[in-house]
Length: 480
Image (cartoon, rainbow, N blue to C red; front, side, top):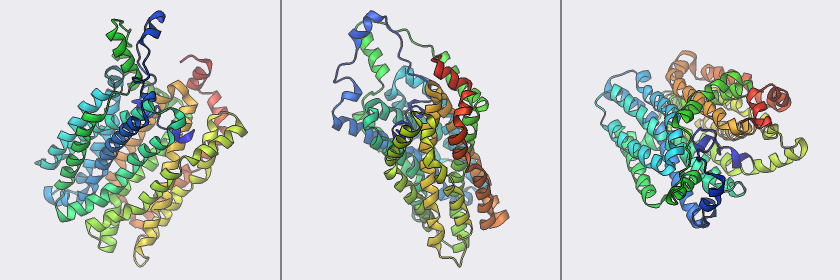
């Protein structure tokens, strides 16, 4: 099902398989997990407590990624730097966010989820102090990099935690909440951060993140148990004196660091859909820096009021999150029509992909006076709605296409997205200053128009393209 599988592999930590270790066949039954030890057999209350905690952790990290943009003007004045230099705080955070899982993903498969949570989230909390007290803009950008670096493993492991404890048949709502935390956090952060910067100071944005992440960290230390089944299994085996043969960390690092890039540039489906999602993700983070400028300069809004411009996008994302389980119904109909083919994930995306350019043109030609401000803010609704739906559908499609290699495919997709998200904010100000809001947004809209047919292309021609795919053939042949 679409929402049920969309984050299964990506959020298990970017590696292809659990590193469970191997036991002699005769010993396996003796170390199977009992009912109270198996995360999928825990009571419903315990499962929901774990789910709420990891969703809160994810939302807090995502919130931190964009709250910085609300204080960019104040940061520029405080450090006496250009706006482009001040925007580097967004760029470095996302570069750190892209690189963190490459190191901590294989470690999580050896150490389990909880040890990675405790290490990385704890360091994330501490780096908020560095951001708030940074003596210069260089120090601030460095602290932001490490905030992203240590924040990202928490997000990837949180999604994996949900798949640990919920079977596919019950996973729709928990994963919908996880997706909501991942995307609504960054959208609503500028709303909060704008008023915090205006009435307190830009430093208080980081103190706020410190308070939120610190509280979630304490709650996780007390109430969040280990959920990673292979770690629980190995621990129980060790208790019985049975030693599992571990896959070496070197092999895991090689798979994590090399295979995603090899696949990205060898697989047309993966490359083109990753490029498409990276472009949309880049626009999202470009908007985080551009919206405050557009509404501040053209309408004279304060930092707090400018943050409200993201509400339209947030509404679209919320509606998509609520409606995402319905995608399962659509998928089921096309499975009945096409069989269990990956392309059954794509039909609803064929139309939704056109909402991205529509939203961009809508915003560009209504953002300036005398058009009422609510008209341009409403342009965020189709953009936010289609962004969520495209993300869920494309990740599910890639997972189905590459099977046991799906994690490497989604790892490449995630890193590609983060790179675009890191780079786009750097030219957002110059884009709108140089071309003006109407044509600057239209330029992005024309690129989105060129990419919009991709879901249709892969819906119709995907099977033929997959037959030429090395990794898809290996999956079909069982050579995984």
